[in-house]
Amino acid sequence: MNLIFATHNQHKVSELKKLVPKSYSIFSLKDICCFNEIEETGSTLEENAQIKADYIRYKFGLDCFSDDSGLEIDALNGYPGVFSSRYAGPKKNNDLNIQKIWAELKGVKYPSASFRSVFHLHLSGKTYSFEGRVNGNIIFEKRGNSGFGYDPIFIPKGFNKTFGELGCEIKNKISHRAKASKKLIDLLRKCRID
Image (cartoon, one colour):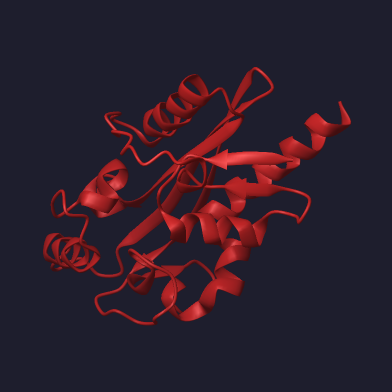
């Protein structure tokens, strides 16, 4: 089964390709020659995921899915959330985003946070939406070279290493995207049976 993942983020595509069974082929926007930047104008992760999936479905007529993910920090009332990739500005600079978070969390001990991923799927004329979440804490140093974004400063609950230290193999089993992807895969399997 072929599905378009409505993203230009090759890190996300690579991560997801490792999660889905080999019977599924995941293609990115680049693979269908869609180089337009789909504007994320929603005020929630759910809205942004739907905007991206709707754009591909209605422009190309293809079965597709999209996600929007964010880091939600309790002490910052859920921020950066929907603004995670561009928290420090439109250039989407990971280091500046992290520095801004650290500055805003100054004096907060063991700040609790969650990574959340929302998927929106168009499949055979129907739409579906589901999410994955992983809870943890923010640390005030960068640790590990694996992953991307906020991975070096996020320690998932039950672990003593950051996503950046745990590596892709472990992260791909416990992450927010892994949990949402499992729901996606379960739904795809069910749809094939029905």
